Image 1: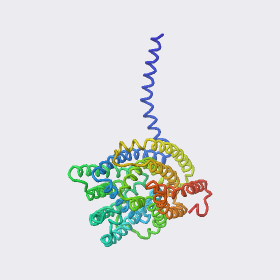
Image 2: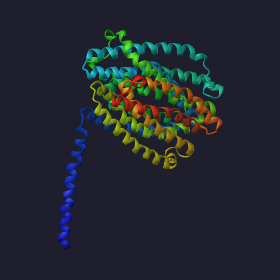
Image 3: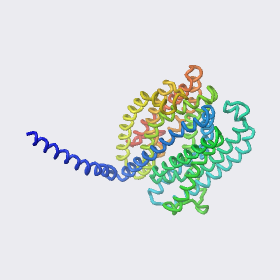
Image 4: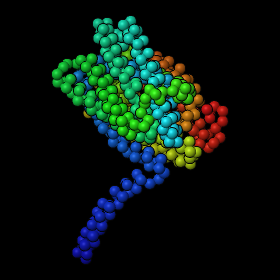
Length: 474
């Protein structure tokens, strides 16, 4: 009897091993190769992006303690503030990047490569003119700006900061133009390739920072140059590679520049520009508010918590990114059933993510201790509101990506303006008047975003059901 049981167990074990070995790869392959062609492409991009973002996140997490140990918390906070302030100028593209994304996606869907080339060339030309003008103005104005006062630092740092800001801005102008290759890839529903640029830049920065720690001591200028130059190097190589390869037929050229298409690109682009300005005020001013109210040292714990709870936002963004241009293609082909199914699936994924954020909050304290040690203290309230921010932000993005993809962004533009107007006063009120510190700043951001949490889903379902009228359909 025992011998019989043993024989059965052996055979069962052999059967399970054989079937698991054969079926699991088969099921994985089936998942990535079945379904609507648009969904298959999205799944492949999502899977690849997870791997790339995982590498990027790992490198980014390694960079924080490495840079923090190289600099002190105050200087590290200064770098974070400088980089965020310079990043504000990224919105000077007047929304043309997102305008190109939608228009190029439509042209590629219709296989109109001549129009695609015109869109790309014209966008490069316009953005080059804009950023060159802005850079000239910045060179003239910079000597008169007291960066020590603006960044709430000792007066003796004024000259050093002025030089650093100028160098960082110079690299930024190059990145401003070169980043368009990422827009082209995303419009062609290849966001995973675009997502590879960040980890490649991070690897360059990690290596350079490591050598800086070996051969120098706490030099803010070195850190600024390394972080600014790394992504530019990657974008130069990527632009050369793709425009001489896959996108050779649509690569930018002076002959294809046609400023008559400016209106077509900017018509949608200006609305995106206003949305970008709203995002600038809501998301990018936090470091400056904290620097002015609490000092640059407080920027460090805020950004560590922001980076930690940025993980679910990053994961959800990876999932969402392929769908922006996919929505543009679907609405062009009037494939409403696919859109409806996709949005419902994304909402289900969001509920799972909310549970994940709750678990992250529970383990936040020991995680911080392992990550950055006892050098920086992150209050529980700051972590809690960062978790709330992650939940609200990802919920809004489910519908914002759809609305952006179909180009019906006028209502979003209006409540974005309202959020922009109330964000800074509310953040200051919570942080200073209610004495909540940096936790009050992110709570102010949450309060500003809550408007879109109601209007965006309503507009999305109206468009999907085909009964959107008036402002809901503009």
